[in-house]
Image (cartoon, rainbow, N blue to C red; front, top):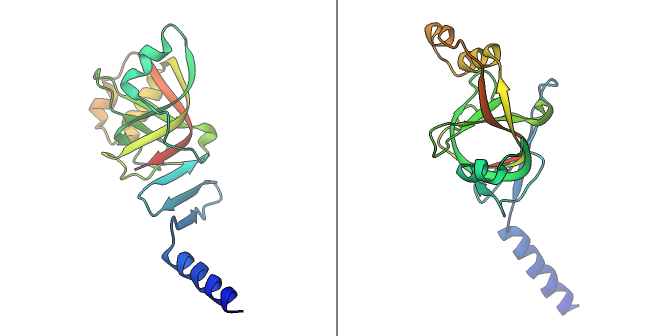
Amino acid sequence: MKNILVVAIAALSLAACGGNVSQTKTNADSTENQTTVIDTVGMSYYGEKITPDSAVSVGDLATLMGDKTELACKVTGEIEAVCQKKGCWMDIKNPNGESVRITFKDYGFFMPKDASGKKAIMLGLAKVEETSIADLQEYAKDAGKTSEEVKAITTPKKELVFEASGVILQ
């Protein structure tokens, strides 16, 4: 009986200290089917739950792709900008000067609008594609650019983009 009591107290003590307590928030807006998990080590998970291991720098992405037009991979980088309408895309800084646009698979989740400057780890599909003038102008509007800056976009752009199925925000 004494041993059971000692074991029970020890188990309760360990549980009370908590190791990796997490909290889940579900967005109440039915048009945004999103779950965010925030754990005590300062990482937030969006979309598919992923791990931070084996992520390569976004700066190495073009080299990894070589002459491929698509590549499934896990990348990491610093967030440069986030859609200010609802967090439906973000730009990641690339050492070559060109940012990489990140969108989210099936618009299944969105990023916090104040995530700029934070590090992100993303699992998904890198693609080289041509972004239309209309899309480029829409991205510029979402980013809060002036109407003059939006109107100045007059040519499509062939660029490296990434569709994330899961994101860790640090």
